[in-house]
Figure 1 (tube, rainbow, N blue to C red):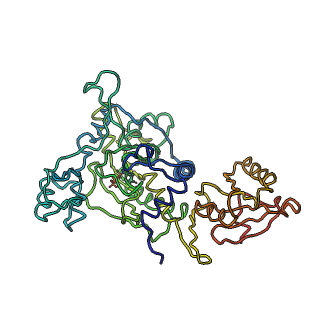
Figure 2 (figure 1 turned 90 degrees about the vertical axis):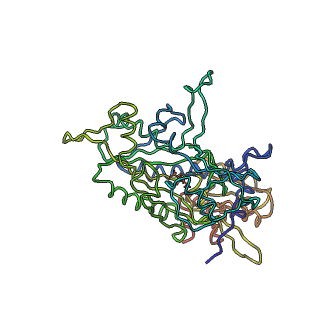
Figure 3 (figure 1 turned 180 degrees about the vertical axis):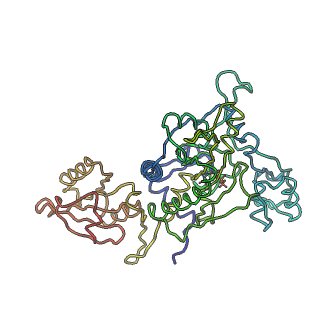
Length: 458
Ligand code: ATP
């Protein structure tokens, strides 16, 4: 089996080729914040569309909505985020570094702690184990306090308490507060699901590990409204559906994915049951995708805070508050897993070839047109334009030796290269090269089916 790649290698690769840039780089950067470059932005959008096609447009009783980032603050009161959405913060008095107490304990001891473990117990564990500051190695800690992860801002010109609003820390609440609107306008019958993709914000104490944990990220979430008696069935349905998506659609390697089960006292305040799909990231196995049974918690809370009826009336005149099954994944986290999975190095003629073995549907460019020399540019650029006219994502490169250009396309995951040579204009044929096998075939231009180039190599 191949050695796991380091975070440094993958990050440098993605920065060098324009998948990702350090945010605000010309001003010295903003710590742990990243921008997506020309390749990253395309692949991110491809991934969103693949997710929408799989979970929404090709599945019955599924709807997509798009709600605001800023909501009425009562939403967060009702959801419990104002009181509960916090991490235990501890500071080193000597070097002033800040840490998440639960992560610190996890890193240096085998003590079992959960989301609900009391702050006084966390302090005791840190003292008893004489945990040192990972930065300056001193033991001089502040008390632990709860640090709310929601970003606060204010609306309007008067800066008083009434105008405080929050950047949403999850997209889910936008769905819950629209439950009645969606049900009324779609006339959907339970069970039905509502999906949303959008930015979420969390003032994480320790954002880290590249795009794995950042303060601004996108979530792809589904809230599936079901009867209480259907909770387990739909929970299992999503375990299956997510697995199929990861393995059959995205083609992630099975050995990198595992499932983590949690006991009742390890899960969030709103959840009846949670499992996580873990991915084996360069920094270790960690959460990729969460699946939670939120029960009727959220709709009941909104009914009680808004005083609006959140009940559903079924065809037998039974009135009830539906339960909710929620699969929730971070877009950048999933993209990171895909990029890690795709990255490969192999020895070819005593040199290292770096290949992004991206599945064709996720490749930013499906094909690259490469004229062998500049003299062939006129003919080659016509081919390039005709491919673009067909709506196929294509790139064009004339600079450097053909070998170097192949390597560049390998490194950004382009599945096929189309090389125009001196005979091309005479016999109307070009060479198509396969990224993974490096096999080359010569074909007549009129026989090229851009939507099924893999067929040429069977
Ligand atoms: P973690 O334990 O890693 O903080 P979480 O359990 O708080 O995650 P959820 O609230 O379940 O995360 O969010 C659902 C998904 O959103 C996660 O599985 C992850 O893919 C993504 N996500 C959450 N926080 C972040 C973040 N700070 N940066 C990037 N993605 C995130």
